[in-house]
Length: 151
Image (cartoon, rainbow, N blue to C red; front, side, top):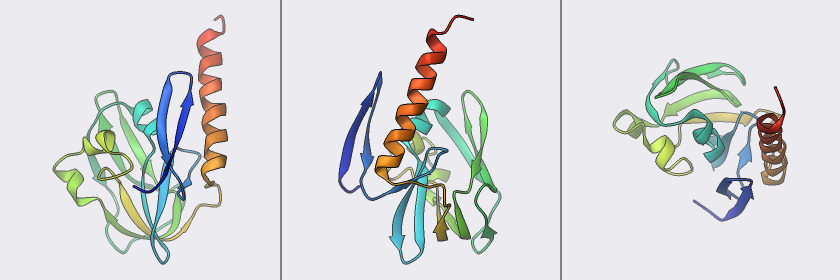
């Protein structure tokens, strides 16, 4: 992983890679070559999902993909969640080492726990690091507000 920025809000602490793009649905996108993007869950996403124990892909190499389209799913102890595409282009591959150890998604979300590669362009809603920090601030503040509001 390249340079990171330390981020802390309330009890949530992480290091966010500099130079990545981030989606509003808490995926990171790392430039991996000309028009290639390696994509994974942010630490915030893995914390919300809980421990990941399995995954599956509905797409294969060469399939065209659009932003918002379901690519597959991840299974945690808590629930099964769809994996959505955050780019437009062609599905290159899912991370092959996750077949052996899906837990890498939680243990090393910005490294070996990446999810998939897309050839194309990030969704227009993806933001830079400063945009993602603002999104995280607003999301965490909303969670804290809901925890403290009377029912």
